[in-house]
Length: 132
Image (cartoon, rainbow, N blue to C red):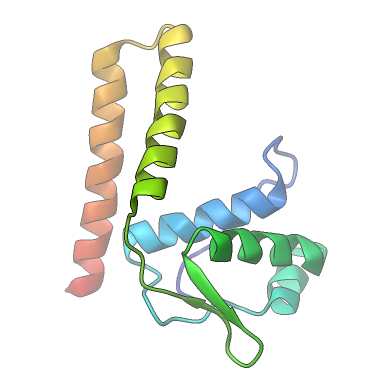
């Protein structure tokens, strides 16, 4: 796996969620590609000094969400990803809540849109860099 995973062990965000999020961000950025294997749960746990069950929970969440395939022989492998109706509905609901939080905190709409555009452009740029 070529993605650099950084965790904030003092964050309120659970470690398994942080791991899941960093892998998804790696897929979006193109630094982790279909067919690539992720480190074993025990290896990743040892690298971070965390319980391997925490890594297992992150990998299982990635499996449930269709980002990886788990196999006893090959471990966690990045799978093909495509948005289906269930994903799109769930994503829209999560985006709505996140946008509502920004509005409720007084973040101006143009700043929200600029941030969204910059983040999307950043993912596109990283994918372009990988393909070069």
